[in-house]
Length: 49
Image 1 (cartoon, rainbow, N blue to C red):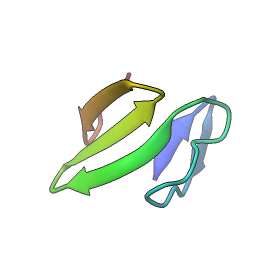
Image 2 (cartoon, helix red, strand yellow; image 1 turned 180 degrees about the horizontal axis):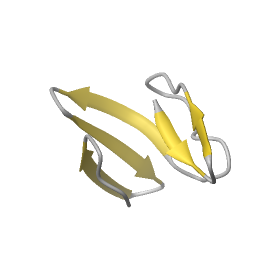
Image 3 (cartoon, rainbow, N blue to C red; image 1 turned 90 degrees about the vertical axis):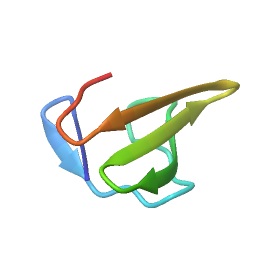
Image 4 (cartoon, rainbow, N blue to C red; image 1 turned 90 degrees about the horizontal axis):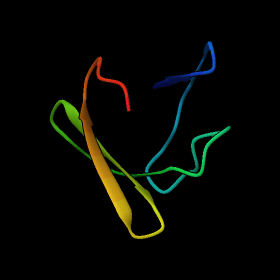
């Protein structure tokens, strides 16, 4: 589940996060990796990016 713009949404691997250009690329334990083009970010539970 991803929170953005005051709403919570369910995102599956390979899906675009609505309202952004980020795609959920993978989950490893308590971390999720998002990609946008060649850029990648890994965030933990409760973190913001």
